[in-house]
Amino acid sequence: MHRTALLFSAISFVLVAAASFFLASRAVEYVENSTQESVDKALLASGQNWATTRADGLVVHLTGLAPDEAARLQALEIMGQVIDTSRISDRTTVLQSSEIVEPRFSLEVLRNLDRISLIGLIPERVGRTFILERAAKIADGGTVTDMLESAEHRVPSGWARNLDFGLESLEQLPRSKISITPKDVRVTAVTESPEEQSAVEQALIKAKPDGVVLIMDISAPRPVIAPFRFRIRITDGEVELQSCSSDTRASRDRILRAVRTAGGEQKLICDIGLGVPTTEWDRAIIQSVQSLAALGGGTLDVTDSDISLVTTDTVSQSRFDTLVGSLESSLPELFSLQAVLPPKIAVDGTQAATETPEFIATRSPEGLVQLRGRIQSQQAKESVGVFAQALFGAKAVDNKTLIDPNLPDGWPKRVFAGLEGLSELRHGSVIVQPEDVSIRGISAKPDVTTLVSKLFAVRLGKGNGYKIDVQHDPKLIEKDNPLDARQCEAQINAVLGEQQIAFSPGSSSIEASSQGVLDAIADILRECPDSRFEIEGHTDSQGRDEMNLSLSQQRADAVLSGLLARRILIAGIAARGFGETQPLADNGSEEGRAANRRIAFRLIIDDATTTPSEEEKSDE
Image 1 (cartoon, rainbow, N blue to C red):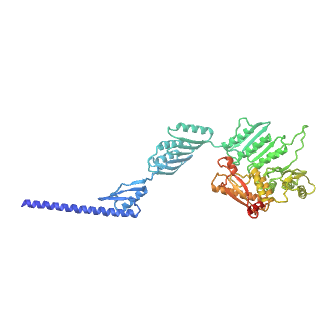
Image 2: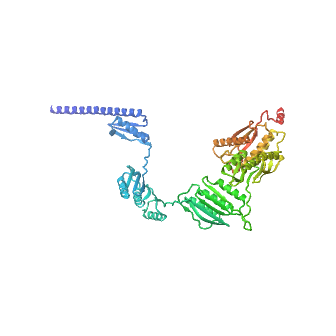
Image 3: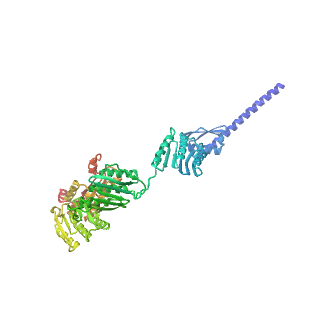
């Protein structure tokens, strides 16, 4: 009986244990399934389709290939909103791991006597307090401005060593800027003299620990020079540099190079300092030295922006006017020039007669007009230049006249009359002197002598003499019968075949040397006024297609404008740019590219311009 009861109790215990295990298993399975279902729904709702979860009891394993670190962190954050983060097991793999960039540690220390400023990002472990205490000790009761930031990160290799050397250097440099990085130490400082500058540089090099990269910029203050002076004398080829000032080493080197080119062989010294009147000081000095050398000798004295040039009495008046006028025109705006040509001394010791002042204007067959000689004032010089540009074109005039306030009355009137007479010539020259105006040259107009005579008589009035020596060239006379349209096309392109219209590089501005080409084309177009033409602009293959197309159109338009300025009726003339699309030669060579950069004239064929031969062909 006792055994039976014991057996029954054991069986009951086993059955209860089995039932409990079954129920527990079902409960755990339910918890796992419900937890995983909740987590999966949250991940899918946030777009984390890459994530896979697996519940294992109370722990949920997150697996999958995350596209980046941000996606992985977002998935963990979403799961943490559903279950406790301690129950999450992260087993993901990141496809593109976002690299954490190490901070770029640097310290910049500015010191001006007892004032020190600290700027930069330093490692937290080094300690802001350590740097501030060192700076306060160096300032010795002065002001220390703290603008430091710190980051908790490992200390880079070389940082501690460079920091210690940089702060030690700061103690020796009252006016300095020291930049410290893990790679190098940069020291910029100002010393009281060149001697101190050298001593500081040697001390820093000596104190530098092994492994420290030191970059120094130690300077001594430049003295203030007042006034800035330059003086040179050239006598019989001997060059004597008596005074020289410059603001930088580069400026000094350029000035001394110009003196050596002029013949200076002595030891040349040029002081460097502050106080230069303009940043273009060296350019003005170099131009003046070159002009003095070209004149053959004399004295050049420059004080700030005032230039005095006294040449020798062996220089001719015309050469003096030409070179001094060229110098005056090219000097920087701030500078004023006073040039003197000493009077010539005769053999008997008396003063020789001075040369007659002149104004000279020349017009070349290519259309280039040069203005040389003397004019009374700066205002008159500008007025003459504008008048000449109106007559001959802005790009064709080179105005290098010299100002002389001692010219006789009526001088500008003679100059204007001479230029107007020159405009009637294809090429020639005008010389204006106190007593008369002389003009000579070639014109396409048969009655040119009468035209110029009437012009001078009206413009100059009574009491003013003039000499006229002009001729007309029959080859330049317009023909009574207009040319055939195809003859016009052939003649124009023959002119362009001999000399192309040249433009400034990358520009649509026609060079002065090509004005004569435009004149010749205009003469031909006058002989066939009813013909229709297209001006074609072409470029080489260098540059972008769009740029070449635009440039070719602009150049064709410039030629059209040039013809309009020559009073050619352009109603039947069109301008079109083709860019690089129609090359004549291989763009692989410079010769080929030069041939492809061109202007061409093409006859527009329609019923109005069809020649008889073409009509006969069409009838066939």
